[in-house]
Length: 110
Ligand SMILES: [Ca+2]
Ligand SMILES: [Ca+2]
Image (cartoon, rainbow, N blue to C red):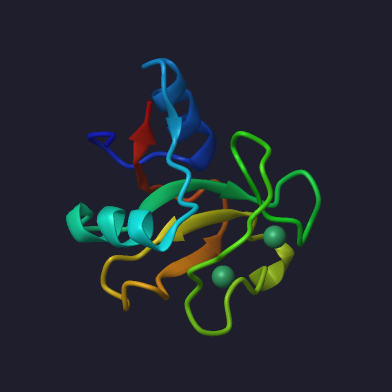
């Protein structure tokens, strides 16, 4: 995890400079695992920066199973393209799309 909050883009750079990338969560097991140790809002490696409404992982794989909060992703104000995980919400429904320039710590994975 990064020690301080940063934008999604900076978070990606932070991870990549460590020979890693933002975390990809493609199973329920992994979702539970990440949610179990994270204690604040964090970035995960999911966004619809490229094509609005088309959520993709940082390795360009498509999103198969999402663990969204209720009524998310909502692209609020047409300006929410990056995804945070909020450990305060229920484990299988804790993702939200928010503005990519918001400050969040990030979870990296090798
Ligand atoms: Ca969006
Ligand atoms: Ca949202």
